[in-house]
Length: 289
Image (cartoon, rainbow, N blue to C red):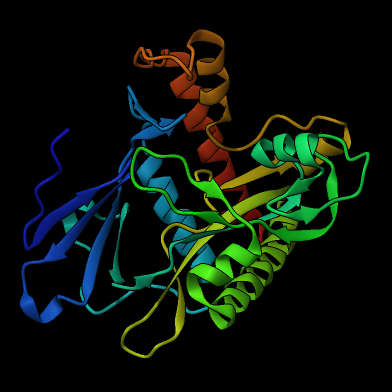
């Protein structure tokens, strides 16, 4: 799908969900326009049709979190967001990104659950025996991944591997920042009756000042697993405020390991997914002080 034309900005890259643009003004070469599309991906495929208003929800929630986290972030107010993409785009400072996905888990599920069943560990972090799916971990753990190229799977790695990639000081800083943000976000989510089960952050260095800075999307349904606390207390551990509905439907109606392209999503699956995104945004933005 061709990228949207935006006056004053040149398209440079499209990922599974986001489109990136550089300013046509050489004086603004230090900025990048990040546009969140309505595209939805699962099992490393971009699916059809898109989820209505998904880009708006991702942008609104990321900005909401940035306003509440006491951590430097990539948002720039130097120039306004173009009118064509208002509400679903961010003008950001270009960062020298670390090649590490900073994943934090407070509960055990997803790929972490599979690793635990096989090895009793997640990314080299030893865990107690007898944990149940969806159970709360003794304390949040940092379980990083190496950022793969578009179309490839991210690779779970140990903290020792992070040190090899970016050095001890940077590795410690990313781990400590990630855990700090996760703990603060968990406190805020609880005010809305939500559990933050796990999430991922991306950081880079701001070349203007050398400060490690939070970038990309933050604590959205695409990067995080939120559960209803009331449902969790009832023992319900699989319903989350994200695209899990899409994953479940695909797993039941298509072979992700095969070679055939994924089928189009039914209208009811698209509607249910959009409703989950909308509910999460509504709960957080209206129920948290």
